[in-house]
Image 1 (cartoon, rainbow, N blue to C red):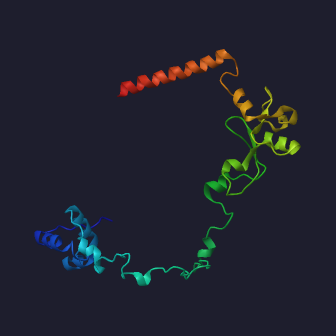
Image 2: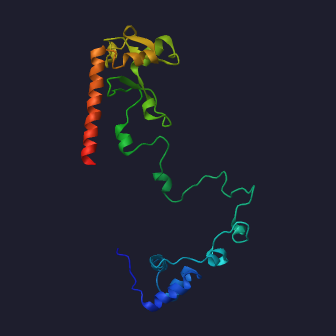
Image 3: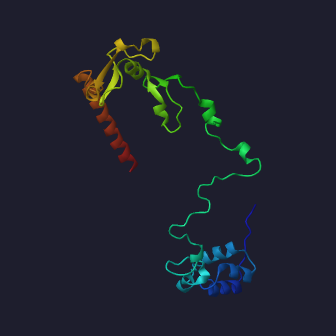
Length: 226
């Protein structure tokens, strides 16, 4: 549907220029016989604004702090809302199609897998779904199987520690994730194992060289585009 337009004539513009700063826009629209939105639009194009006197008057409809305007409809300190403790109950057949707790639809229903399901992450870690609690971040609904195996035997993992596979024993197959393949190490130890220098000085220097080349390439590219 195309919005209607109004071709303003000089006489109407004179009325708008004289009345807009001091009168209610609705009354000006009724006087000119056009829609209120068109009056607002034309006033904006002409740079017209309501005067300070109009804004301070009862005609503006503003609630003035410390004044009487609108006070009869304001909440008073300690006043109890009329709907406190009530539950909204729609009429008709609305209740039949309302969302119900635990209800899933669309992608959520299509992608749902039950508790006890397994998945393999991008880094090759086998995880098991342990909860459907919607308040948990999705990743926390899944726990590495290695951690579950360790905690089943030894209890909670101490703070600052993680369960890791022993060198050469990492696997995404449940049958191979056994206690003899796991160990509990500190996060500091894991950081050392994952360091670029863990495989020797030559490998570490290659990573450094790769980073230096990437940084130099970025400088050249940025300089060319400047």
